[in-house]
Amino acid sequence: MASDRESTEYMNGIRPGPLTREIPECMRDKYTIIQTILDVLAFLMLAIGYVIQAIYRSIRGHPKKDLKGCIALVTGGGGGLGSLVALRLARLGCVVVLWDINRQGLEDTVKLVKGIGGKCYGYVVDLASRDDIYNTAKQVEKEVGKVSLLINNAGVVSGQYLLDTPDYLIQRTFDVNILAHFWTVKAFLPAMIEDNDGHIVTIASMAGQVGVAKLVDYCASKSAACGFDEALRLELEVKGAKGVNTSLICPYFIRATGMFEEVNSRFVPTLSPNEVADRVVLAIRTNEPVAVIPSYFRLLLPFKWIVPWACISELIRGLVPDAVPAPMPLPDPLEKPVPATPSKADSRPMTLTPPSRHDRQV
Image (cartoon, rainbow, N blue to C red):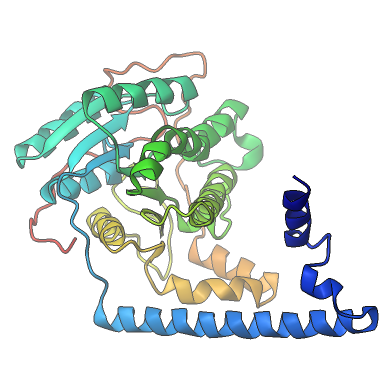
């Protein structure tokens, strides 16, 4: 016990190691400096190796893993981006499980997936309810099997200035956009770690990297999603779960999803949902840690911490003069959602239209 305690204190820097104790007191500071320099040099060599490897893979291309037979769960799969990702995963041989609060949207997407020969299951789930998530997760494992690909895609937006946003909408934004990620991951990650095989995808947003007016609660929730993915990835590495991967997806505004239909965007066009769906599946197949869409935004992000705030403010306000020009309808907080209603109360999924092409790169 004493030896374990000494080892722990040594690792935490509280107690000097056996080699350090043998060094005279007057030399210990110099030894620590030399050790620090050696550690930095070792890290730099390792970092250079990783950079060379990344450059090589970007030129040569990343190998794509086979998803055939994988059980993929997509939250918010009853419409919008979730339905398009589901169709692509089904074409790759995945067994697709869809979660959504919109029963009609679920039924439509399940029919589309089965129409192309895929195997699909739909579950009505309120992603703002932790208990509903846990209970449905057990039901999925019992009826379908172990989920090895989890795509946290569901999201809602209120689209008003902070002081005009009702408290219950702020609460729901965080319940669906980030807290649901905790509950779904806690439900399915243990089996992935046990099998040392799995993939967790977080659909965040560029709004998680920069702030936008009228989207304070949305930006905050997506920023939390970005931090969630990064910390989870590091935690899996610390635990030695090398077979479990994570991918963070940060797209710009996507058109035709029902969330930002009227966004006023200058210079940068809104994204095609089909192109974003292709990019999501490509990130999954290549185990890409972070996918920024469009990719050139990755080069602009470092300037956020380099140039003065006034430059960033002018750029964002010029790029997005108004994220939600039209006032968005507010659901009644006392009215319970009716699953049979074709449209959601506040996430407004896009109409389900199958992709016009079947040979998209995924």
